[in-house]
Length: 325
Ligand code: HEM
Ligand SMILES: *[C@@H]1O[C@H](CO)[C@@H](O)[C@H](O)[C@H]1NC(C)=O
Ligand SMILES: *[C@@H]1O[C@H](CO)[C@@H](O)[C@H](O)[C@H]1NC(C)=O
Ligand SMILES: *[C@@H]1O[C@H](CO)[C@@H](O)[C@H](O)[C@H]1NC(C)=O
Image (cartoon, rainbow, N blue to C red):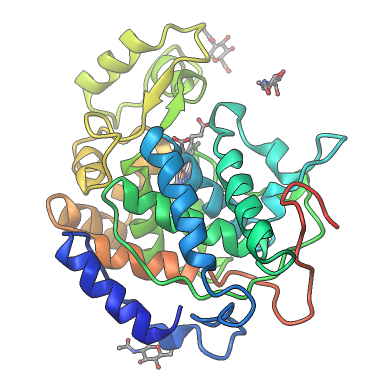
């Protein structure tokens, strides 16, 4: 989309009450992506993806979280190259590394890609489709909007063994390091963790923290007691399946409630609570508990979209997102 169209869209969105934030666009210049990349070969690419995404996510709001997470995972492992979407007959691709409860939403990306292939076959990469789908999905659940420069190419390799995503049991030093390794800052960590304002996990990842934290049948003492009790009511020790909200009390809406929860010891994962164990991330949590973080989120998502991208003649434009050409 050309800059003047973006500005026009921003006006419309702000009239509609959507939070809009323009990141530092010059961050992306010279890195091979372009806000109007498909202007000749597929001028309505963004519109097509938006229509499909809004249709799916409006019908099933919980898909927004799944799609946002999908994008994070794709970018964090081998860069934003849609490697996460590749299927492997041997079950050793990136997508096989994700706990399967949250393996949802691939159908949205596939539907958007299919609609694009009808209009402009072989032109728009799956990596770009995923970047747009994630952005548009967040908008449906009242999140901010951010511009998505396009021109990413699709990778041909996907390995489960490379899926070194941060663990939900990671401490703050491990989290900071894993973000730094990707060129993301401590602030990006505090901001992007706010994505846990929507979505779910399951008792499988909660039980170790509330039933046997140090191997002595105990719970994590840094947690809010009432929250521990509520989690134990929800998750019996042998239950590994029941869904649990990441942002207790406000898991369906994209807002700043996640930070209130973390500040009160109600972060679901060790990695959520860990934000209180560093001066900078703690200050961010305290500051955001109550204030809008939409602008920061837009900035960090914009930045995420440049991680290890393939451009120019690298990679390919897949015909189907689940397999290489
Ligand atoms: C900081 C390190 C992070 C850790 C340790 C982490 C860990 C996790 C885990 C373990 C789950 C639950 C998965 C399951 O039960 O199947 C989850 C869910 C989720 N994560 Fe993260 N995450 C992190 C950062 C992020 C970032 C940066 C984003 C996006 C920008 C994100 C977005 C989400 C969303 C939206 C869900 C809910 C998914 C759904 O409802 O299907 N996470 N995360
Ligand atoms: C935007 O990013 C560029 C390139 O990194 C930097 O030189 C410039 O100071 C930034 N502008 C603002 C307003 O942050
Ligand atoms: C989920 O993963 C488990 C273990 O990895 C596997 O046995 C099970 O078949 C998977 N379920 C689905 C629906 O893919
Ligand atoms: C708690 O953890 C310890 C050490 O890992 C293990 O030996 C014990 O069986 C666990 N208890 C339960 C109830 O899972």
